[in-house]
Image (tube, rainbow, N blue to C red):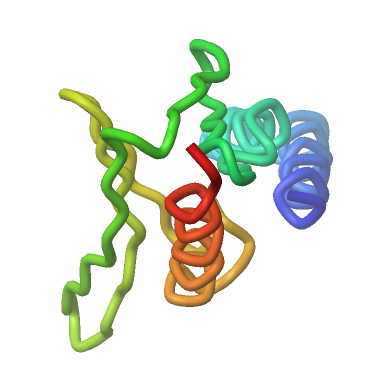
Length: 130
């Protein structure tokens, strides 16, 4: 998220410089880019970490708050897609009627690696004494 904040500051500086020294039309475009970059950076900062897990289940953070999902009733799987010649892998977490989709940017790791860790934690839940 540091890159997004740095980009936001640079875009803001460019918008101000263009507003003062330029014709102003570029300042409008740079201002819109600054807002978009700032919203993205703020979202990434507020909801970090998006997904945490322990032996009891998952904790998912969204803008509407954190949600605790116990292992029973929670399904995790990978979804692979190919767009514009590039393969993309996302981690899908489903609980009841809710679906959460996480990409590498959300997780900070490859979704395949995260699924491996989640499988180990789920196995601990399944093997616990009743």
